Length: 424
Ligand SMILES: Cc1cc2nc3c(=O)[nH]c(=O)nc-3n(C[C@H](O)[C@H](O)[C@H](O)COP(=O)(O)OP(=O)(O)OC[C@H]3O[C@@H](n4cnc5c(N)ncnc54)[C@H](O)[C@@H]3O)c2cc1C
Image 1 (cartoon, rainbow, N blue to C red):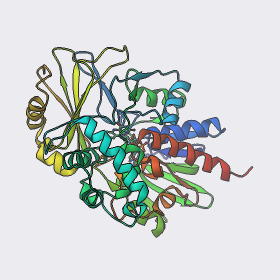
Image 2: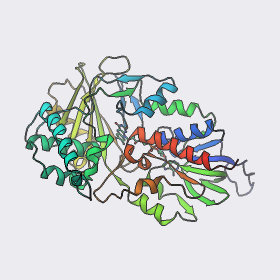
Image 3: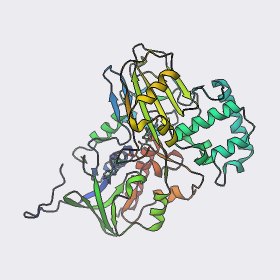
């Protein structure tokens, strides 16, 4: 990497100040860096992993299917992502199924049509009684209070628990209107050939500026600039844009420390937990989306870049209790067995790929979510700069938090703030 290492016997000259140091090469950091470069600055991106993309990580299986180990679904209102892909010359591939529309199986028993009808009724009930979703109540408490069909109520609760990665008893009722919890029946999209291509294309727009395998350890800052420390080297910059998750930001030492209003808001960010499983298929099925109501995971088969359904079934489990019950910490075996029982319509091939994130040192969770104690002032505090330090990441994206769309929007927002406060 280009950052010089410090040698005790042969001191290295300090490099010319990189104008802005961006920490993290997920969607937020890369989008910010490209916006800074477009604004005439010289961003230097430092990324702890050996790859770009962060929680967006695509992989091709032996049978040719491309799977998303992390973020996958793009809905039609995720306009920043779709526009970014278009600008970078990437096509969006329709999946042939809808993220928000899943056939519920197991539990008390219900069906798709009843769930969708009850979701529409729920929206009406909440619109009539906005006090229900205000004031620190949980999704579980609100759903229990409303006169919904019991099977549909259970399936809606399971669906929200899965998507937010958080048990509904610990989930803020405000998520009932959150973008990531959509029950839309519109066909969902993915970046053709893998969502990570978007990160790779953004990085191509930053030739020589993205450094991999470089965890930032410390940031010293003052009114006139920042000094960023990595293993064996320091570099000076005019400003630093931190695009790392709140869950691991505490590992970076700040001198002077960040103010309590900022650390408090960071510590209050709640994270959901999720894992994914991919099993190759011997026969290609039609597109599908099936939710296991009791086991809190869902499964899908979907079209790839060429429009054909890919020979793989994917599964996503959400919430810590669901991951524990599926024994993901011990490997894919238990979940694979449950999936075979849930989807007798599929011809599973041998093998399985399990993707876990709680054990990933650079996130230790899945994505931000909202507990009933959520403070509405926090999104503003999370996004607000501290002197020359600027903050991006999905957790700073307010209503778009938890999403790739939020990560991109946050990167653009933080870059615009930084460009706006520069002298001259
Ligand atoms: C299993 C799973 C499924 C998901 N599904 C979807 C979905 O279907 N649709 C959707 O829109 N979103 C989904 N998401 C959420 C989406 O992945 C995130 O919202 C988005 O990618 C976050 O981008 P980011 O740039 O904010 O953070 P990240 O992608 O986490 O990027 C932060 C980067 O900072 C780096 N970093 C951390 N600490 C340091 C350090 N000290 N020094 C240097 N670098 C550091 C990390 O390695 C990482 O690369 C999913 C996430 C997961 C985990």
